[in-house]
Length: 307
Image (cartoon, rainbow, N blue to C red):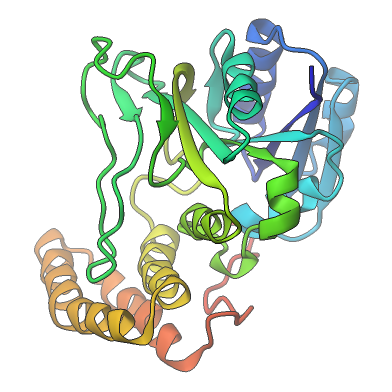
């Protein structure tokens, strides 16, 4: 049995993170296992309390918020496992989760990364994720398979390729990270897992899904269902992802689509919903891509204000 490193990142969500750790202790039967928790610059440092409450867990403290990719990358550098299981802190385990995912990588040497099926935590029989379709790069849109469907077993027993993993739960072969590199930290939040999958594919690996493995997700606990932070990075990074992973012609077509269809449509929606403060955020997210290169580390948005 290969060592699996379970990695999660906390930001001002101590209770949620503790619920994840408790679910691991309650549900997991896989060994050997190491657990690494990164605190991503929370206002109140939870490590002294956690070190007493969870003595078997390795904790890392960052004094600033490094974002989803940065926080996970910090732990990846410390992890000793041959397989690394990156999970959102707002998830809870189901039985045999790690066994199924580790077996997927063990039995399929071409698989660089694999996700489980994901259910919504609030309604445990509703599917959030059972794979992704390919992205149409001219619009940067795709579809999440199974989302909002009642799970009646329609996706059971599938172990094979999908277009993209889900960032809430993904097990990666350490060897694949060594070849493809770690997640790009300049995304900060959203689309970095899509970008990582593209890097994995270019390194010769396939993206897998195992629907026998199941995890529950309390979606958007950390950033909220609708927030300025989410609105900014979803739009900024949609453009950034396309710029990083397509050719000049495709990027041009996408940018025309985004500027002349997405931006006007979103502005009309913001006005209709009374979300006038989102209009400058959308324009700022768009303008960032005009003024910054694809590897720029300048986020263009305040993320370490502890809010």
